[in-house]
Length: 208
Length: 234
Image (tube, rainbow over all chains, first blue to last red; front, side, top):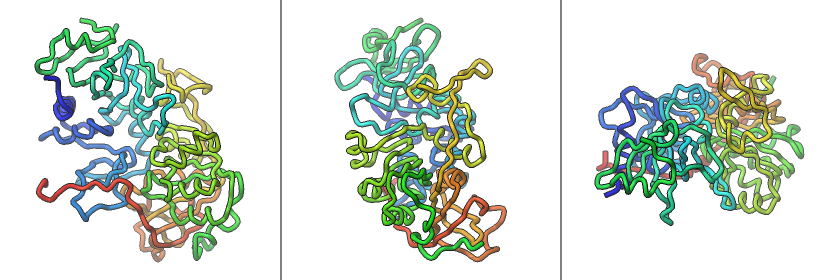
């Protein structure tokens, strides 16, 4: 059985190590926070916060306390706040150890597309371009294929890029791939997924 | 110099003109200068360019100035929550310059710090880099981005003293600090003006040198995505 959203998030959480400062994107990456266990992880929210806590209890929402997805959240005893320029200084400056992000397409050179589909409504890149250019390690979490069954793991991205050669690791419902010299390397297969299944669903070059 | 004004309209008197570039603080609807935006709407100023991370929603924030077609151009990183924005953009009535969020924040910071340009890795190899100078430093490619020098900055803070020292609250600080610094004139709206000496000098987020006018008022502080958890989940 391929992994479901929660299993993908749990697998992505294994990428995180004690003491890391991490930025989680919107969607499945947000679920990663549920699986960090006892590890000492500090979550950054790029609108100006380190030490992001869980959603507030009903009635305790604070309009001045939101995450980058504009959702109400809470602070922790370790929390610090800062302005947007400082926030992206720590991102661009390489202080954030890892970002876990969703994607529309990834290719074998580590190019990432996750902000724009030409001809469709364009919402903007937000902080995604800064994150992929600046953080120590970029892990993409996404379904391996789109709703038409086409591979999202490509030889070359077709959509406008968010960053070039920025992705380090790809976690999908089928398993885990690393971006290496010459293509992608299979690191792990989801339970019940064969290497043939993985290769069939992947357009990118898979190297040994 | 007296910095405190009675209301938002007076605080903007003489500093608003057609076609100007305004840097606005806020992230989504969090920490936006909602009173000053209402006053700009009432002023009728048009052909405005806003450097602002977002464009509000249809009936709040910069969205209210889109309804009245007072905005010519937005310099933003994300405009997803605004249907009128999309309509005007797709029909060609509104110009849009997408900036990566960190690049926008740094462009404001740089402008405020007297830095006309800086090199960044953000956006290299993407449409953002088209037409921009590329330069290598230590084997890596960077692009040149320009500082923003705004005619006016409008920001929202939590507390101010009468000298313009500002304190923000939680994540409502966001773009307010860099936006404030890059304006020739900065007008700040605050929830509370406190007596001089009552703000801890070590805990001031933005020194009063950057803030020329202050107005106090009641803020709606609308929440865009109310998300909660149940007590039993705790």
